[in-house]
Length: 99
Length: 528
Image (cartoon, rainbow over all chains, first blue to last red; front, side, top):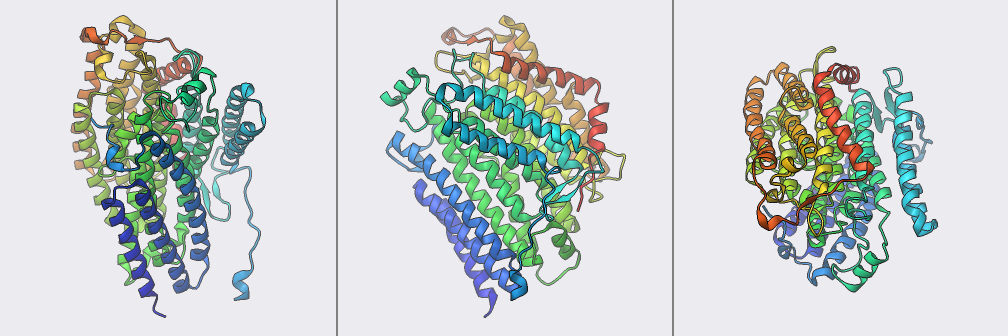
């Protein structure tokens, strides 16, 4: 097993996440892109854990999962709050704050 | 494999970590109050719990203050050293003052700055009923305490995983708090969404950087990373990429250019007490974390990060100052001003010649300089936002600068206090801001970055222009007729205390800077 493949896969997933965050316009999809990035981090942590032969990375990935779950709670509540007020979750409509 | 599965029970230095633990327990008690205490008692209950836990944390910090106590605790996960304790002291004091702003009721005739019901659609019947029934979200106090506990952990984190978790603990309550404004709720929603999306993006980038450094060194602990940095391998790409991504995550929280774009929007949209809290405590925690990461873990590769941070520092000062000049809203102006201050703070981070204090003992090193600067900046910022809360129209605060015309003439004391804060921001002697600027510039100068100090001095003159413009608007322009609904409301005791403490400290630290400089210098040794 060559760990490089996993590292490259993690980097690709992370890049897809960033590109998704930058080009998509729905707040939910943006949020999913961030979750994809977090999961790419998890993959990277676990594969490095295998490379180094210690469990730090695997333990860390559990922390990341918990944090991601907490982030979902906060994030979805904010997005739902905005959807109820505007009937849209399009981030382009969020343009009141400028100058 | 059996050896891997043996898990030793961790030892935790409860007394040393007392401040963090007490604030966290206080936050949990606050949640219990929400669940168990009848509604009409919650407000007082939350205030008592918040005050007692912050004061208790300060008390424990005072009892454990000093070099004898300072050590790396919690199995190497948390480093309670001089800079940590000094930053804890400032965060706890500023959080206490912020809590007073949170509790302000007199300004909007008996209600807080927070929405009666966050789940209700703005202008709906539900919201009006909730407002009429004087329902309130007293949850803001536990949220404040949770954020404070994350902020206390953040600059003390001694490994990347603890740092990431602390980053999230401090961020998540702030995302919610910024969406809770009573007036202009759509702006507040938008601020919360922007802060949340960009914040979670930046923490994902931070995490990827942490994973890369773990791949490079095989550990999350800063001292192990430091040892790995000292022995070059062929995997330097991992180190440099990881370092850059970690810095992106932290510089976002500090609000440095080019990661500043959320700052003005979130500061403007969030309720003003929350803005004040964020502007001071988040920046303080994040600059402490950046200092520890760069000095303790990545001190060996400082030749790589010093020029980068120097460049970012120049950009931050420049962009913040220029955008502040063109802004027409006092909260936006203060937001850009906080961006500029982030740039000045970064000059101290750059000027690092030794990696324990930034400079030999007895001189004002980077860690001590940051503490002095943040003390000056924090008191002035809290006071200034306290005054921002007092200038009101028919629906909440009036933040546009046109509403501020002539306020200094009609209310000389308010004008004088705001002028004092502006002078302190601008760094004009004999205010506290001057001492702060002197501290960070001398740290950068002794680190060999004289050109950076030169640029910073020139840019602080540019920044002085927009601070003085606020003073000019308050004293030298006549109020326009169409803003006649503007009035300055006299605040309750809490906000008065915040403004008074801010004003007194802005003068005191400027006239008698010796004790804060001594205090910071006695607490400037970063432990590894």
